[in-house]
Image (tube, rainbow, N blue to C red; front, side, top):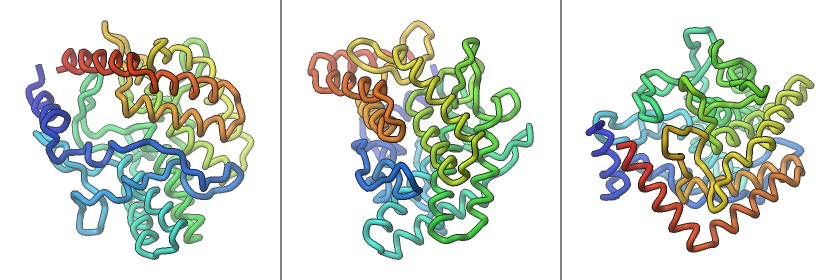
Length: 322
């Protein structure tokens, strides 16, 4: 039993102390002010994330409090989302304060993109993290790569400063590169190609991380207009379409496809996020499969029995993990 994990879990989820959850949790929403034909506002509002006010460094970059032995840390995903939320607010209001906050986050992304042991530029998490296996610092993530790219492209469009585009291009190399070669992409035995949120020995295919990263691929396609990027995006989309059925429990969705005796069912937050992300995928691609699953999972969401069943199953999973 990992006692520090257990304490951090109780502090954050049970006793509701100030923690990283202050940033992550909110109501997932679609942003109605987006365009699939050009770089505009981000696909989700991220307003609550933009309003985060707990901990920052001297430059205004957010720090998340993971409590316990981890404490306050930079998280590249959170920094990208904070920047995207403020970028959205600037587009909506014209307030320069939001613009400057977004630029500060993009500058952090520029300054902190470093080459991993295989020579691939990535954003590192510099703390250990418990997932299906312990991720030892420093570790990197396909989700961070995708969302960092989404932020950098928007700040490039906003400022015309080429350093943001150059950094996005460097970061995109990880999306084109297999995990074994230092990237974040994994090709399975059926030739499905995935973007992995967590790089573990047996890939788990985290659903929300895959879709969020895929939005970054779409943004890079709009920026580059390269045929190679279009082919890659289409392959990722095909993987998602072929495998959505694996995430469907008949009453709820799965967080990932890991299976060590108890399926990792999505929390209420992540199930709702899946629905929003699927609706975004439908908007971007016009592929009916995404709308069909979004509607089906929304029916689960509105069914009280399904909700309670999912809550119990998730609780059992958390207890087992402890």
